[in-house]
Every structure is written in C-alpha cells, then in structure tokens.
Image (cartoon, helix red, strand yellow):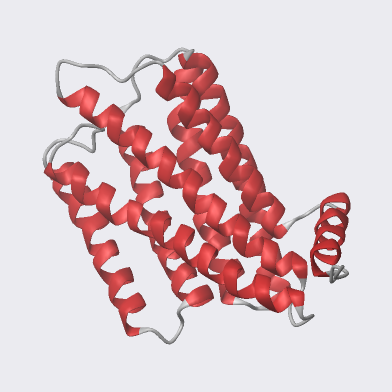
Length: 248
C-alpha cells in the first residue's frame, strides 16, 4: 500500500510540474500575475512531491538529512506564491487579504525555522508543526471559499449571458481544488497525530491522500487546460440550464 501511495504522489508531482510549467509559459504571454504566482506554487510543490517520495518509492528507508530538509523548505517557499495568487486573483484591494497573507507566511516560516533549529522539520504533532500546518491550511480553505463564492455569483451572470460558462466552471474547480487540499491536510494531521503517540494512522489514509492528490491535479488541469470535449459539455449544459421552460 505504501509503494502505491508513493507512486501516486510522484505522479501528482509530475502533473503539478507540467501544469506549473504551462502556467508559467501562459503568464509569459499574458503578463498576468495570477498565472505566474500559481505556476510558481505548482512548480515548487512538484519538487517536494518528487524529492520526498521518489527515494522512498525506490526503497531508500530514510532520506539524507539535507535532501529531507531541502524538500520541506521548497514546499514551504511555495506557500508564498499560493497566498499571493489568492490575493491577486480574488481580493487585490482587500486589506484583510493582505493581512492574511502576512500572518500565514509568518506562521509557516516561524514553524519551519523553529523546527529546523530544533533538529529538523518532522511530521509530528508539536508546536512548530502546528504553526506550519496553520499557515499552510489557511490558503486551502481560502481557495475553497473564494471559488465557491465566485462560482455562485458567476452562475447567475451565465444565465443572462454576462459570463462565459467555462469561467463560471473554473471558479467551481478552484473550490474543488481547495477542498481536495483540505482533505489532504486532514490526512496529514492524522499522520502527525499518529507519529506523536502510541497510535498509528489507519492504512485507509494512504488511499485517501492519494485520491485527494489525484483529484487536486484533475480539477486544476480542467480549470486551466480544459480539453475541447469538456468545454463543449460545459457550454451545452449552460445552454440547457438557461433555456426557459414553457409554462403550462
């Protein structure tokens, strides 16, 4: 089961890397900040998926300290463009969004520094882990909420022809991406609890984390690179829902 979980994580990392690369190329053409920031987040996150999971999948029982710490710090650095993407895409003029970016960044980096000075970042339920966890899980909830709110508003505009259906659907996919990350965060918390006491995480957690990672990749891919058949389905569904029903 563990080997399958590592393989799923590696696969997710590869797709995150491809999606990040494509978003960075897209930002080079559009000169838009959201694509650049989200592309950086995905590119950095993909490095953690690959550097952390590939050695275990190949049978290495323990990561070299430098590799383990480097992969964790790469993932931590990715939190910054993720938070900045949310602010840029949804709340560019909001003071509370700016404050949330600052507080979450401080949480993540304070926890990481404390953990590093204490001997290394570990997946166990202690003060430094909880700080990092709080700083990371905030953008996940933020993405889920903003996507749902924006989708609800865009859905009303689609009905009167003021919004492209694929744009409305993209907001829904953003909400789905955030939800999948929340599920993954809950699994990580369960693992940290298991590593901190006599209990262990249930084997089901491996499968749940893998499913959350695959779903995260799928939703984000559809959001930015929807295939033609998917776009056609969205347009047809929107046209059907917008058609007025005849009154008896």
